[in-house]
Length: 142
Image (cartoon, rainbow, N blue to C red; front, side, top):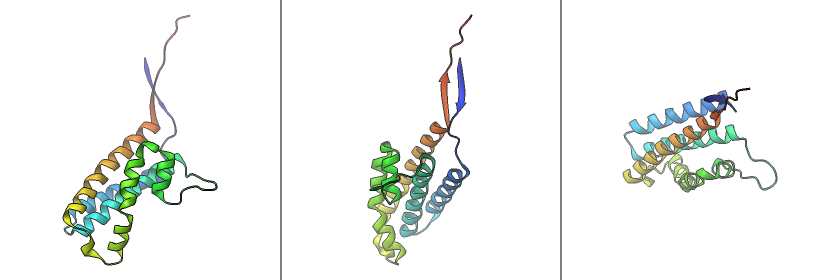
């Protein structure tokens, strides 16, 4: 017999961050300019990473990472490669926010959008797995 047990339900904050990630992803998909697609996709990933960190708990103490990407690596090492990919794009997003719209070409925007879609799916799967765990329960006849 399999029983579904709820453990560590997702908070309102986590649901809010996932909703904001979805909205950014949608904006990225419909943005006509490469720099807009890139920025929205990067922000979608940032919000998804923040949802994982919010759910798992922010690392604390001396030497704790200060960026969401560093925190993500600490709270969920399986997502470290994703975190590194998006951390590498943070300076480019800052450049775009500073008005350097020519800094992003179509190829970079598309690769970031695809990565953000995949990362959001992975983060959501991880969070849902945390929230619901199937536990096998054996019935013992007395």
